[in-house]
Image (cartoon, rainbow, N blue to C red; front, side, top):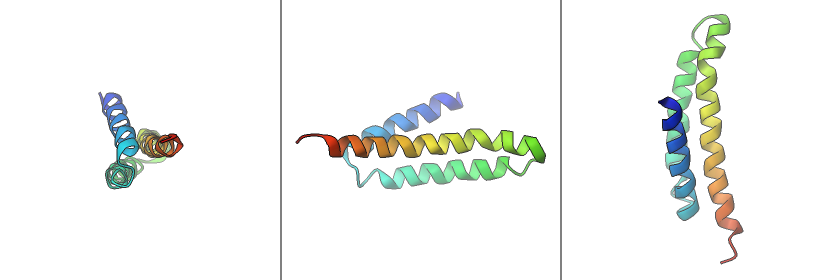
Length: 80
């Protein structure tokens, strides 16, 4: 269920970044901040569990950043 939510957020951010690149930065940063909170909370667990609990949030944050930048990059490559 969480994977579907992250994928949906990535798609929405990519579309938003394509159509309104400057306005897409605020939602992207807000989403990354929220995922960062989850990562920090997960890393409080001891040892290997801390790394295991925080990893999904870190990778989701990277995916959100990549989808936003990909939308903006595609926008600037358009010929019109």
